[in-house]
Image (cartoon, rainbow, N blue to C red; front, side, top):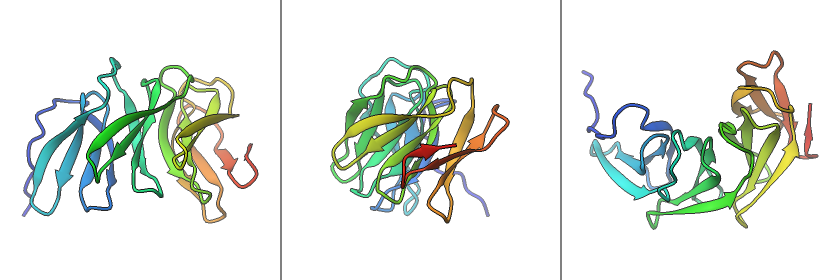
Length: 181
């Protein structure tokens, strides 16, 4: 028997992606919603988390990644900031401003070195977020290519594979030596 979960009341395009938090709750990544969504699968309930800085962006974030420190990092799509949510304290903070423009990244991958790699969508660069000290850097990536990649996967060899969306090649980033090809 299938039962729908609790209603979130945020309308369409509210969230884009989710992350399982260490407390067992599923954190819904705000895309069009002004609040973070929190779904508890144990009792089938939805609650609104904190607002994400009231950034005035449609499609603020696109996916999230659980960082080694237990915080959830929201991947900036149209947001100018990296989003940082602490599920223990239920506090949202804007992380570092990335400066890569709109429609920048679609998804992120936790690299073996603890850094979170943002997959370039409209950004010419690969985004690299270091959760341990809340810093953002970028690495020259595919160059500007509209809607180049959408999502990424950590391969068994430690390299991060960017899934092609409109680009006709697979992107490969090696976090061990900071190279892209």
